[in-house]
Structure formats: structure tokens, C-alpha cells
Length: 180
Image (tube, rainbow, N blue to C red):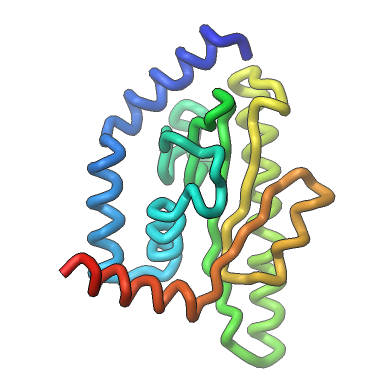
């Protein structure tokens, strides 16, 4: 993708995701105050701590939107950031219940572990093809509550980061206290 095409894509993102970074921050702070969805709380944590986990990310371009026009059947991304280097960074999140026990829960965890990687790799491929973006201009990341996944992205060129459920909950409580 040449620079002009990247500018067109960024303009496209701003049309379909017109909220400012401050608006998005306020939305996520509301999620922290009323954490009705664990996946959304994980996303709030990542957004508000993006530099800690993915330091090259600078500006959120898309959140929970399809980067492929309005073709949500082709997949939507949890986050799409612009990086310091002018590349795009696609991040998929997954709240994986690492505290549940039993055979059924182990099976569910493995399914979620596999699915989050499949999602980000598939979306990267479709995204790259649709927008004619070279692979080196589109980076991928996975963010979960499962530290066991941290090594898994190495062989598939996916940066993998995590936060434990306990640390996520402790952060949520501290964030609320600090906001009062």
C-alpha cells in the first residue's frame, strides 16, 4: 500500500469510526464502572494500557468494526491501530476463563485459544487482500487473560500479550478508586 492509499484508508476509518480518542476513553471508563461484560472489560484494560503491551500503537482507527467495508461476514476486528512507523496493527482480544476447572472447561479454553489466533490470522489475510496492503505493513496481536498463550504467536508472526484475571480485576478496582 502506498502512502496515498494508507491516507485513504485512514480517512475511511475516521468516517466509519468518527469518535475521538477521548470519546472512546470515556466509553471504556464507563465499562470499568459497570463491568457487565468480561470481554469488554478486557478491551477497556487494553485500550487504557495500550502503550504497556503494544508500544508502537498510537491512534485507534477502528473498534469492533469490519475493516473490509461493511462486510461484517468477512470478520470484524476488535482493535485496529495506526503505529509509530505508519503501519497498521490489528489486535484480537479474548477473555479466557483460566479459573474454571474440569474437562469441559479445558476443552472450552483450548477452543478459545485456537479461535483467537484463527480470527486474527484470517482477518489479516482478508484485510490485506481487500485493501492491497503488504503483509509487512499489517501487524497482528492477540490479547487475552491466558498467560499460557504468550509463546503461541511466535511461529505465526502474531505478538501475544496477556493479563491475568486477578490482575484485571485488581486494576478495575484501583482505576475506579483513583477516579473518585
